[in-house]
Amino acid sequence: MSYNTIAQLFLDSCAKYPDNKVYHDKVDGQWQALTYSDVLATVENFAYGLASLGIEQGDKVAILSNNNSKWAMADFAIICLGGVTVTVYPTLVATQIEYIIDNSETKLIITEDDSQTEKIMDFMAHNPTLDKIVSIKESEKYSDRVQTFDAVAAAGEKHKAGAGFDFLERANAIQPGDLLTLIYTSGTTGNPKGVMLTHDNLVSNIKSSLKATHVDESDIRLSFLPLSHVFERMVGHFTGFTVGGQGWFAESIDKVAENMGEVRPTIMASVPRLYEKIYNRIIENVNTYPALRKKIFWWAIGVGKKAIPLKQKGKSPTGWLGFRHAVADKLVFSKLKERIGGRLRFFMSGGAPLPKEIGEFFLAADIKILEGYGLTETSPVITTNREHSFKFGTVGVPIDGVEVKIAEDGEILCKGPNVMKGYYKNDEATAEAIDGDNWFYTGDIGEFDEDGFLKITDRKKSLIVTSGGKNIAPAPLENALLTSAFIEQCLVVGDRRNFISALVVPAFDALKAWCADKDIETTDMDTILAHADVQAHYQQIIDKAMEGFSRFEQVKKCALVNREWTIEDNELTPTLKVKRKVVTSHFDSLIDSIYES
Image (tube, rainbow, N blue to C red; front, side, top):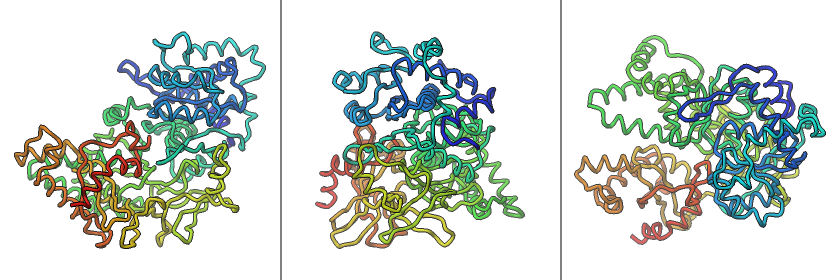
């Protein structure tokens, strides 16, 4: 690991693993692969192509696309040219994209297709810096104004001789302190802030993460989290490339389960919502089993839970427990593992707290989820659980070179080479986030346990203060509710109110199946949610989930919401976190109705 920049990382891996397959895209129903040599040739040509379009060292180039190999190759081309990649979530609307393009002073944007290009056309005419668009896919609507990725790469191959620079020399001249990327945080309110990450920020995080978690060229990754987000970009895109591994780009979020069966990944990164969905679907299926089969399933999970303390130390159960575990594996666990490809070593979880019950359930079934913690501003990893040393309900221990401490008010502070350079053109926000001793203030509340594992208890700004003066962290309550197969999404509320309540989005398929068993008409969702038996059912679920909490913390009542919260309605961030203020404003009358009753 001699590289000190992402450009050196790229060139080193291409030289070391020329014939290894690295990227796979599904095209017309078939997976198509590229080798490291293929990627090097395309990246070099595309970099020269960008130069022919006027892109110089230090220029900002944005990428607005879902995950695919050309996203990854465009990123490496921008980086090796000495430019700065501005990542843009493809779910953003035109006005949000316009702010990022304008604030970052982007000169050229790479879009996925006409649907993304159309967003740019809405504002490009009056943007002071943006003057060129390159589309990954052939354009039917804007062919006279947009060049394709392939055309730019072809032009770059012809431009080499007269470019005035050498690709390898330019890439090797990049310094660790040079700006690598601008990633705009998907904050819950106001305009996003452009996080400035340097080559050293990302390289230090890659090297420290590889010390904590073993990954090598035999590993196969399925990528579906947005490459626009630092988690997938560092963990999957950069780290996987470093070790010579293979990456497969999921067709879409909806196709992740299907693609897992095809790709059979060995490692995979996700936010907790995926694991919650998988868990809920498993439970839904189990509830349809005949009594004996259902009993065998839960017997197996019980055996698996007895083996958890051993598995957390990297050991296997022996003796009588080992025998029962082997039987449970043959009858139950092997079938669950086959659903996710059959050769997974571990899942990685980040972006939000993973409910302890979810992690324990999967490990009981011999499926390991390693939870970590970090932010865009920290490149992103601060702490992580290790493959052979992990605790549920925690986010592990700090990675090499990163210091973590807890402030007097409980806020988690971080210091290390992974901490961002600052917020782009926003000195005030930078000064608020990083103090004079270079401690970064995460905005999260947490504590270390007796073994040095970090627990995240809540977001500092999410704390609810009831009218009785009680401070309550909503995240643990929400995590407890989300373990129910009947709850898809939830938001705990009660700020300045006299008790805690929740907005609950039902898992509609599970609810309809339950209603059918109870002979409740299921043609109209509003009528279903208003039914007295349904209301009572959800109250029982809430009461059961709240048993482990003190009385003043407990959710007392809920209101059922008749639709899921979505990115399109601005209620979720691109990484599927609920935007608390947006959701409460959209459903303020429904919240009021809880307290009026």
